[in-house]
Length: 377
Length: 226
Ligand SMILES: [Zn+2]
Image (cartoon, rainbow over the protein chains, first blue to last red):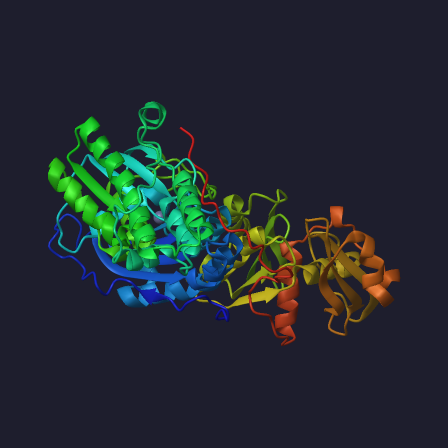
């Protein structure tokens, strides 16, 4: 019954995040919630008690997508099915709890890849019915914000906050006034996600997938000011309609044209400079817009989430810009920034703690679930 | 008692008992709503049968052939439900359940699959829609001495125009109409009970993937409208 072509063995991402114990609001009496996340290429199962992280198991199919240069939805969905039960078993073992002890189950119902989401939704409904536990269908993007409550330092998430969520699947700017019932989408990408742009530019430069870490690596030796690549949707005319929206497709094309022209001229492509300049363009536009939102809305807090947070330059520029603007910067540990089930469990625990009713059993996978829908009801 | 789940076409869920037969069956024929309805159908089938999850001895999944996106919903639900109640998850080809229902229909009538006495020589080709202008087919000889379907060949995919050639010796056998072939979880469950009783082995609860994944890299979820 064990899957034979399971992508990667489930691994724990929790080891570096020692469970917090100082936060009296959550532990040790908070609700015990298991969260399931399958919106993209990570099968995540996490378990939290209130705001305390007990398990964070992630099984990624990233390696299977490498030869295609991006996430192939059918490959991701197949891997989710293979990985689901082993990930559940591993998370329960890691948390040292039984299914009986759970207070609730939470699952990502969107946004994300439809076929991938459906595997998690089907699994979560079956688990809820088999165990008689209430089920909460939650929003993946708000889950990224919810991850912050699991910080090991126990410092509380102050609201309202602006949240910048950047990954291979999404690039969104949120205004979070309340984690469970007041989240507003300020802007998002109108074409590629930032993480996708990293993958595409990496491929252009002959670097392997996933592109983010590769670009980061070679950019370390490059000059970020060597080439001035365009900053999408930052011209005054674009700002009218797309003040907080992002666009990376023009940037990707500009990099491709620049590299082609250099090759046509018979010159060597300065890979480090191209990578550094491209990375600078992405980080610049992300943080310019995020800090504009902080200033416009008078919210002196910025929270980062999503896999692109792993990018060294994005983190560094965030620090610099936030310090200059007097904005408090919060970055959850990386294992909680990439897609994971613990953040879904954490958001579920907030809903339980706030007395929200479970989701009805007939919710579906919604690939375009808006952030205003924190919980499917 | 077995909980049977099949999402190879629509979504169908049943609770069956070896001795008491079909206790409840719930079906949604929409082929695009598996994730929405699977939970409600399981809940309703259990309630209709008056059976608690802990009373089940196993869960059986239909593993296709069928469109993969929907198929996975039923299989993951069966696996995880079985895990949740600490029971085995069994698997059967959905076509076997269709053949079993057809070949035993005369004895039990629809809805209650009766126990046929034994061997039945009645060749049958199960043909179901596989989308993309193809059909999935499996050829059967009939039922064996224990009343279980005997597969001759398949499942395979073929364009409808090429079905005769593909069937070869079975081309003269009666065929099911792909536009009118439904799989019943009740039949799936009763077949599983019968196989269990006769000590037959079950397959891994994994989809019958008859096609390689399409290699179309995701463009990510579409931007959310405001
Ligand atoms: Zn994400």
